[in-house]
Structures are given as structure tokens and as C-alpha cells.
Amino acid sequence: MAMLTTLSTEDLIPVDHPIRRIRVVVDTVLGELDPIFDEMYDVGGRRSVPPETLLKATVLMALYSIRSERAFCERLNYDLLFKWFLDMRIDQPAFDATTFTKNRQRLLDHAVADEFFAAVVRQAKLRRYTSSEHFSVDGTLLKAWASHKSFKPKDGPPSDPPAGRNTEVGWHGQKRKNDTHASTTDPEARLYRKSNNTAATLCFAGHLLMENRTGLIVDAELTIADGYAERATAIEMLGRLPKRARRRTVAADKAYDTKGFVDGVRALGFTPHVAQNTKTSAIDGRTTRHPGHTVSQRIRKRIEEPFGWTKTIAGGRQLRYRGRDRNRAWFKITTAVYNIVRITTLDHQAALA
Image (cartoon, rainbow, N blue to C red):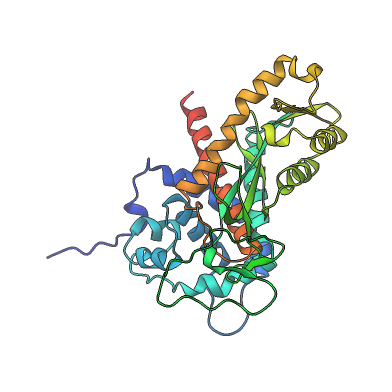
């Protein structure tokens, strides 16, 4: 007589799989946010998917390079690791992709992305992984979910669309500026380029503040792309750090070597370990001669790692949403996921030491 066995997803995930360490941190973080989630449940009507489940799904999408919510839900039907991560039964069907759309505004209204990121940083601080004295800042451009064809004059009748689909449009010689043009797909995206040697693209600007001891990100922002956001947002993020009596340092590349930025960070109690421009520099010799300046400049290059992870692994080379608020929430959560991966790596290294 054949014996019947009950198999759960817990039995199928190897005990030494790295995703187990990640889930422990994620569940701990989400436990801190329970008071917020309690306010977000629907009281009447059909039971909604819990907000923490949607957050955990977003974590999986970042970890496994899944750009589409529809593609994620299709994979959830057969991927037992995904079901285990979301605390689902083997025979439990996946929720519909529209669940993300219906609940996204609710997550934005309760600032869940900011709370999730802050809770992850607290986990790093509890483990004493973060420094409170030495930091690095940098920014990058993130391509918007909008094409050049959508960049049209703000005033006057819109130009007639070319015949056919994806027809080539010749813009050579035409002047198109953010003052006079806007994207009809995403009006908050800006036409901007990183340098004179790169092509302009519709984009937003992502900003990170990294602590220098272990390379964890302690603050993240996504703003409108322009020539001032990089430095202004860096000063804003530094200003959100807890005040300290001791002098601190902040490293940055040549783009931050301006009088406004240097004076701004000094006013906050930071010594600017900024790379000097060759022609004119706001950094004097007293700062560059200090051995700490050289160390900061070497370590600050590590900030490219989370930017690279966000663009390649998490699929952020081109943003997937329209509007700053939605993309900012995605950027904060994705950066938090990078921190979680880093925290679990440090935990594992500490256990082996």
C-alpha cells in the first residue's frame, strides 16, 4: 500500500542556500514595519494580497533580474523557491500581476519604501557594520521609461506622427531643450547627459551615500536630472545623518569640486575629501596633503558597486515606471536589497572567522 506524504516548500530549499540568510533579514525588517502594514489592509471586500508579500516579491525581482511584474507572476506559478520565499503553499496559485498596480499607490502613500530602507540600515547598525565618520557620495543617470520620440514642444500643436511604426525621425539640427520640450510619456523625465562625450537621454538621477567601512548604503535618493541635483542632493543626504561632535569626512569625484558643495559640507561638519579639478579647485592643499584624502579617494570607488548591481542585476539600466515618485520608491527598495545581500555576506564571513 502506497504511503501518502505531505511535502512543503520548506523541505525543498537546501539548508545552506544563500536565499535562506536573505529571507531571515527580510522577515526581520518586515516585522519592524508591522504597525504600518496593519493600517494598509483592506477592511471590506475581497481580501487583498498583504503589503509585505508584495515587498518580498519586489525583493525577489531585484535578486533574480526580473523586470516585468507579469513575468514574475508567471514564474511564481512554477518556481517553488519563490513560493517558499513568499510563504505560499506548493499548490497555491500565483496572484495576478495587476495586484502590484492596484497596491502601488497605497505603498507610496504610507512611505513604505523609505521605511523599508531605514529598517535595513538599522539592521546594519545593530551588527556594527556601519561607520559614523567616513562616507562617500556619488550619482548616476537612470534611463527613463520614455523614448526620444516622446520629447515634444510644450507649447503649440504637437507635430504629426510619422507614418508607420518605429519610423526613423530626423532630429539633426533641431534644438530641443527641457525649457521648451517635455516627454509626453513621462513629463518628469529630463533630457540630460553625463558629460560632453556622451549622448543625451531622457532620464532621472540616482544618488547614493555610502559609509566607507563596509560599503553599505546609508541613504539613497532619486531626483530630476539636472546640473545641480547631484551636489544639492548629496548635501541633503549628509544633513540627514545624526549630528556628531567629531569631524567627519566625505569623499566624492571631481564633479563635486565646487565652492558651493565644499562650503556646504564644511558647514555640516564634514571635511570634503573631493577629487580636485585640474584647472580650478575649491579644495586647498591642506586637505589634499592629508593621508586620509588619499585613503578616501581609493575607497570611494566602491560606490560604483551598488550602482552597477542596481543597473545589471536589478535591471535598473532603464527604469520600469513613469514618474519620479514611483521610480524613487523602486530605487530605495532596490538599494535596500543590495544592502541586505551585503549584510548577509558580512554575516557569513563573520561566522566563518
